[in-house]
Length: 591
Image 1 (spheres, rainbow, N blue to C red):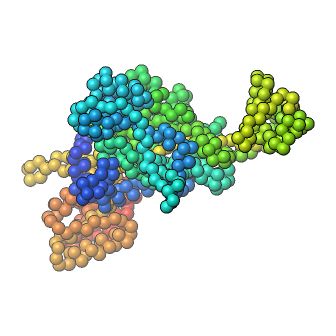
Image 2 (image 1 turned 135 degrees about the horizontal axis):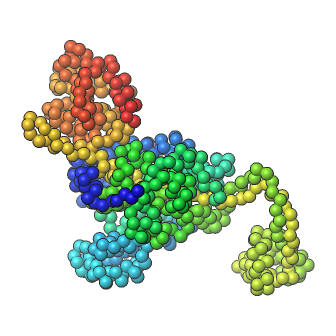
Image 3 (image 1 turned 180 degrees about the vertical axis):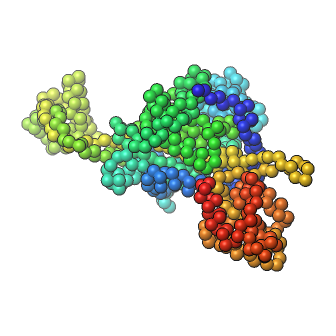
């Protein structure tokens, strides 16, 4: 079955309106421009009172899936990272974007973005020289003044800083949360009793000094990530819960279909593995969890696309990588989650640079007898040639694979080693090699890493976009447009609104008691006594409050209140003594 993703389909299914949600989000306290009284700074966004609560609820939903349900453990590491960590990870040399400058107005831009906008090309993975050629061929100009552009150069996206008052130690604001987990690996491995697989998560701020962020919360210089690192045996990437999802359907846009200009395929997890479209069970299970999380917070499948990285996008060390992308009316498809099998790249890189063994000892069920080659130093020859250095040379040789030494001697007659900046040549007569049998009870392995990485701010934007409803209702014979966020109950920032029909008299006293009682029972409550009841319902609906409780004059006689449902607008009379249990049951049924 083939699913298309044309713009017409989405415009028919959804009333996507970026400008409307930005206006409502700003007006009602979801998202605000940062540093506004100082004219603002691009690439930063404030979460207002409702936005902060919405984001907190989304994060707690993520934690429930990964920490509670999956049993992963959460850690917290510093946001400032020493330079040597990011040299090892490759960020210092490779974490760059192509930048150009306008030759007239002198503004700077990220070149691949303006090439994609003006030349209508996808240029992921293109070199700077290739981009420069397209600029000439397609007559790409400065998007501000229309003048010519400079040649491209690489701009490192990390915020550099100095650690300590002496300014002799360099660091960076972390560009991702993952490295903190890799650095802790030795302690984490002991915590998990050296048993694979195990999962560790970290949520927090990451920082990227974007060249020209022009897309609100889609491209921020400070943003929130939620990442999991799942450490697995390189030869065992099965998942114990795979059978539970084997028949789940996924819409997968494989690299092959993209390169052949074909559309995405709908197929089960089992078929995706059988056809080798997805590399392993853990990877497809993580894709399932990502989709489940998005569905639970209110982002439906039909605005999502699960796209495999093309060859020119795939990191050289990755075994397989997929992005979960969101359909937007303003920005097209936007990546909101990345899920990758990173192999042993991260632990091997940090092991090499730190000189620490970042491996796990795996015991066999039964001991194995193996044949292996061992090096036997000729002490007489080595002592004669290298004198006081001979013991150090023997120690160095003992830590090198004997087969490598043997192969090098057979091919070149000498094996070179460096000791204290001095080179030494080992010759054939200096060593001999024996084949011995050895009983092995286990082995040291460097685990592979499966990484789901969630961009929380982009997910919040997607949630606002696809929870937004605009419907036309009849009121007194006239059309009335109702704009509101239809948040799922578990995500809605405010759970209940409480309205006294009048500002004076006994009604506000009863309404305040109800408000306090609901808050005591764990519900976030908004109390509103200004304006007509119709206006208060409209304000409550607009920010996505699922239930509104109105205290009216009948309450004084029957001790009941009116409970109104945001979506159906149906109203019920409920006794005040039963209100807490009514609302608890409402949320239990829908959460």
